[in-house]
Image 1 (cartoon, one colour):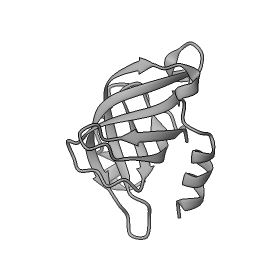
Image 2 (tube, one colour; image 1 turned 45 degrees about the vertical axis):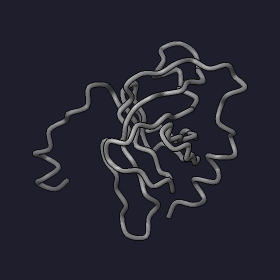
Image 3 (cartoon, one colour; image 1 turned 90 degrees about the horizontal axis):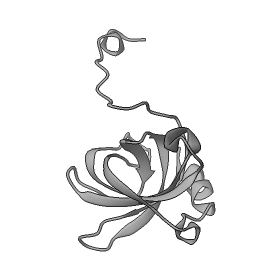
Image 4 (tube, one colour; image 1 turned 90 degrees about the vertical axis):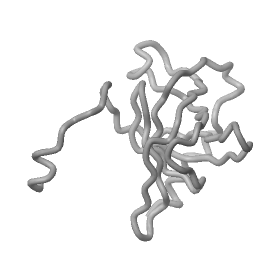
Length: 126
């Protein structure tokens, strides 16, 4: 652990889980969309690996299956509305965006993200 890591202040407002969950990202203002995969996830946000180019502040929707550990019930298909708080891209890696979840709604099961999306995202990552 580096000195910077030791001095890092935790600013997350809810517990973050290391879940690789497939997502469908959509930008409502222009209709662009792409699949992605979370690196970690909480009830208030997610870090998502995706090829979709997004700027900080961009409003987005994410459709995903929220795991039972987060919903405190059963796995649920949800559409999260939020905005990009950070965009990052390490050299040679797929871009990632941090999304702050502002609200969500439960969806019927037919609106879920195809499960093959997670395999495609995992193969595309370095």
